[in-house]
Image 1 (cartoon, one colour):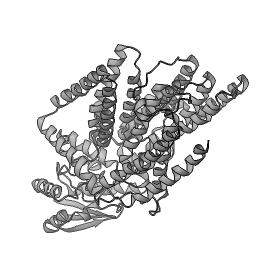
Image 2 (tube, one colour):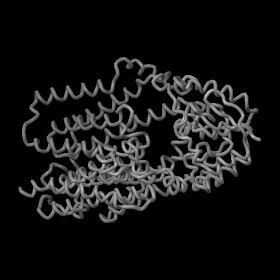
Image 3 (cartoon, rainbow, N blue to C red):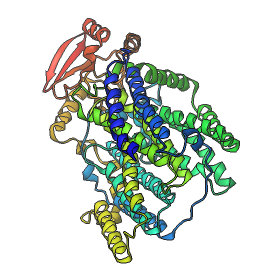
Image 4 (tube, rainbow, N blue to C red):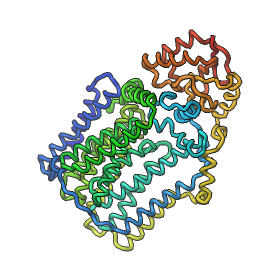
Length: 588
């Protein structure tokens, strides 16, 4: 018992020691330094804890033993199945009840990343050879999905696609919650209440105003995690084949998603394949490889050779160089003054401690399958945090900690229910009352009664959003862009391309013009080689006028860091005019 008392001070000591050592690990190259610091922090803070727990018999398993645990199918309960379907139904109703006017806003910087490359494609039939993309194929070309159905690149399409992906994220999160809860060895009543509470907490992480812990980029990552769970203990040989092929297929398909998600998924795939190899589950490995290489072959056979080459060049730059140019040091956890950055590191270490206490003990009411899945989820949370380590501000840290919050919510709910499971806490009346209250809470959280009638006109609302004119999305200070577009159009000849040197990447789309080079934004043009390539392309299509500066959107102005590009502009262009907030230069 005394060793249990000493456990918390022991954890605190090594946690602060690891945080203190953070600033003494130095490479001077970002984000690689952030990655090294973080994973060494995890090792330094958790390895002594594991040794302590095992030495004083506070845990029952050694970690290697966990890998070889047998899986047993848990009995299913019709009641929890019904509640799971009820959750899906309400989430679907919520999706159908949207109003188009809720989306009438525009981000002239980020939305341009999607609309301008898509406009370039519609005018030139070029993908990577027509636009240099900064995140991945889907995030930069997603309006093309709507283009297949409405024959139009539209602002509304990017909001509807994002809205649809968040809906799918909700479905997958609730499905993972459902599968996890089924593996708990609780009473039926406790399982039901646990599932409802767990699902409501998870959904709140998505619908949180302003910042989401599970943004749209998470879709394939969550799908991959769901498939891993289904692959642990398939119902029959057919489901083994199906889930294994799906894992391999999603792992490669993600190369056309956000590029960082592709890296994360394939890191997890490597870990999972090692796990299967150790367990000698050769059939699963075989079908995973079949799914992976089948999609790989089909993908590249259907892409033109020049697009494949540009895709590989673009991908190399994103993965190898862009992060180096645009990353910065993670705030010092003890001396940096960034509370969120420090709390996140503490939470990761704390979640590792809870994981060991729950998974490596026989006394907890949890199946062997769930023990391994929780380890996998912890590893998945460590991998996805690479995104927050690459761009270490509060926004990116929150966006990369969804699985960390998933784990912490589960651990705390589990401990509460586990320690009270042997007591009669849910007698029939109290159980029914709790069930009704929770389901009512969830109903009013998901369903806005003022918008419920939109369910019956959802087809019309979708059409209105997809086909709405651009000017409907320009409000507030963005109304000024209507005057800018009229002015800019008068400067241009028919069919003339445009090259914007402000950060308003949306402008080429609003002009319905192709950019003169594939480089339509400048955040990733820091390297000397890529600036030279940009200039060489620009020489082939020198625009007569360029928008050089914007006082309406002066936040980034990345081109000021591009000395080679700026010198080229100074040699070839002169001041022409200032229109409202914008400065134009003219070719000499």
